[in-house]
Each structure stands twice: as C-alpha cells, then as structure tokens.
Image (cartoon, rainbow, N blue to C red; front, side):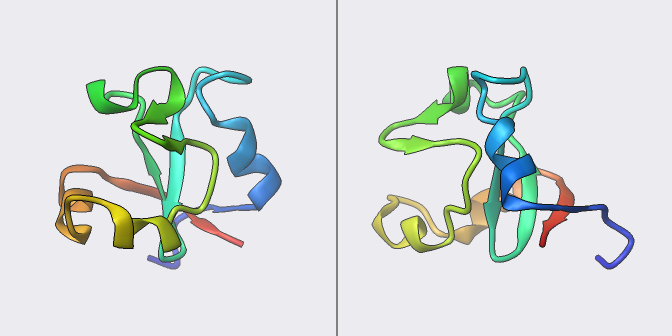
Length: 78
C-alpha cells in the first residue's frame, strides 16, 4: 500500500462530485474512487457525502467493510 499516492484532506475534499468530476471517499486511511458506482451519483450516497473520511460513518451503514472489496484503493490519506 505504500506505493499509493498520498492525498491531503483538502485534496480529498475537492473530489466530492461537485467541485471536480471525481467522487472519492476515504476509509481507514485509504482513498477509494467511487465515480463508477451508481450508488454515489453526484457525490452523495444516502446521507453520506463524498470528499470525506467516512471511517466513523460505517457503523451506521447497512453493510460492513466488505463493500470496499468492490472498489480499488487509489491513494492514502495523509
């Protein structure tokens, strides 16, 4: 995982589906590109917004961290 590029919270925040076309979110220090997911259309997934670290939010989700098996980590959060 150390070969992944490192992004700051500010850089992540710009990838919210609004400011830039990318839809990124972070979980446990890794950044995932959710741009191709129909569930993240326009940077929103239910009450969650892209461009943030959503690690703490997973406890309220109807799924577990297995959901990230379907998405490639593209970076690490600084």
